[in-house]
Length: 185
Image 1 (cartoon, rainbow, N blue to C red):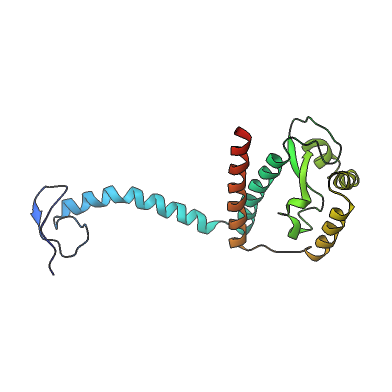
Image 2 (image 1 turned 30 degrees about the vertical axis):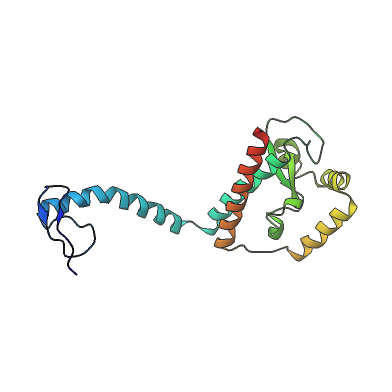
């Protein structure tokens, strides 16, 4: 079946297309105009795809960490610092009880990360781990900390895949939106 006649968008002349697609008329000028219209859109999409393909695993991990840390700060917004009990601070951090660099399997474990004052406990005291443990026991109990200790030994050197990191980022982005909407109501 032959395609029906069409009118060119550019020169307004009637023509018979060779295919059913929306190709312009056979004139060189019309095809050139069509390309100039489509090229910026194609380039934008290709550029975004190329950037995504060039990302390293550590860049995906950094993006996932950013969303996870934001979630921890939103979740613990009304709680004091897990280590020192400070209720006000210039900048808060999501401090890990088991350091994320060593215990990578617990990097995105919500039980292992809590709101902590950024400059004093997290950076200056390197996590203030003794007080952190006391804070965990006080807030959640001895059994909670024992389970976390067991998981830490099992999940010490875990490597995340690109797909897992993309999923983690999406999961915490949606959780962040949900928590932000709850806090606004």
